[in-house]
Amino acid sequence: MRWQTAVVTEIVRRSRAVSSFFFRLPEFVPFAAGQHIIVRLTAPDGYRAQRSYSIASAPETTSHVELAIEKLDDGEVSPFFHEVVEVGDEIELSEPVGGHFIWRTQDGGPVLLIGGGSGIAPFVSMARHRALAGSTAPMLLLFSARTRHDLLFADELAELRDRQDGFDMITTLTREASPPEGISKGRIDAGTIAAALARLPGPVRRIYICGSNPFVENAAQHAIDAGVEPGLIATERYGV
Ligand SMILES: Cc1cc2nc3c(=O)[nH]c(=O)nc-3n(C[C@H](O)[C@H](O)[C@H](O)COP(=O)(O)OP(=O)(O)OC[C@H]3O[C@@H](n4cnc5c(N)ncnc54)[C@H](O)[C@@H]3O)c2cc1C
Image (tube, rainbow, N blue to C red; front, side, top):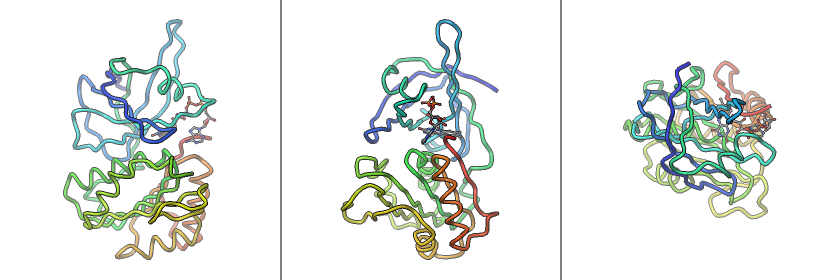
């Protein structure tokens, strides 16, 4: 594994629990949308903690790497980022890793991306990659969040959808009695996935599911219940 010491250049709040951390690397390493990076923290006494984070920036953006990190209150590494890390700090990052959960423009579509909470991060990279590369491959992002305060990258993704070039988005909120206009209410189930598949202009080529373990488990089962061939499903699980 190749490691580099990156500098935090910017921190942007994305929701009440998620912030984006932008890193400048001494040497940009090419990656594919969907890959992740391992963050390695070392305490003065030598104690080390490592965690994986999906790359949210596009492969075309070589000036920085963006990681969208959710703060888990009882966690070890994510609260450190939210409470301690500041612009100018140096953090060790691995080279990009992971080969099963990537989408490149040449992979085409239609593809369905199903993200729960911070599990939207690799899909932001895929959507940005698609736009920057000028792809018109049909791509539908089905995003589940808790409340309106947990919406991530909402303006940017709405802008991409409004281009009407084949990128579409359905957002559903699980803990919001009356969601804002254009946003659904409730959990993702087989019906939601069937409706998303019906919105695609042709048979789905691949389904990507990313989020917490239970979210991924449930969404994958619902996709199968909606008639999706299991071999078309790729998953990325964020926690046990
Ligand atoms: C390939 C990969 C990519 C990842 N990408 C991201 C990312 O882009 N953004 C991000 O915020 N996290 C991401 N994660 C999760 C991340 O690696 C850490 O697990 C997370 O930040 C918690 O670390 P912690 O040290 O704060 O908590 P820990 O001290 O490790 O403990 C927190 C507990 O919460 C569980 N957990 C981890 N993530 C979640 C979750 N999302 N929902 C519910 N429970 C969870 C852990 O398994 C553990 O039991 C990714 C994980 C993997 C494997």
